Length: 100
Image (cartoon, rainbow, N blue to C red; front, top):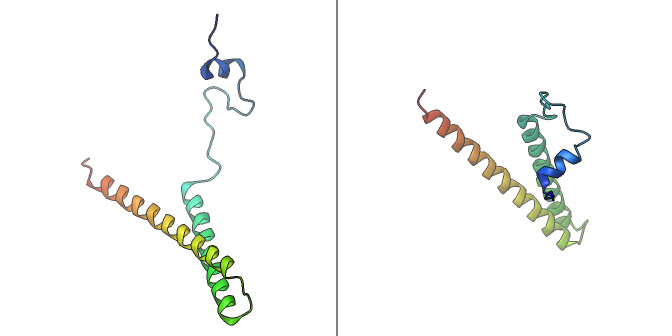
């Protein structure tokens, strides 16, 4: 009796969108493009948080909870970007230290 495992199922049900053998699938988006898009989103969240703070202080908006949520989203997004930057700098330093 055959065991049904994931590897056996892959031969039974090949993916419809899988590239043919010997053919590599090209990435749709480069890492640089992904990072640019991520930075734009973080910037948008920071601008939204600043706008929410301004609206709250001027009295145009009285939703303090929404303002606090916008501020936290912006803060977490910014911290994530900073950690990714730190990891990239660290990786660059490690590569630079390698001997050729």
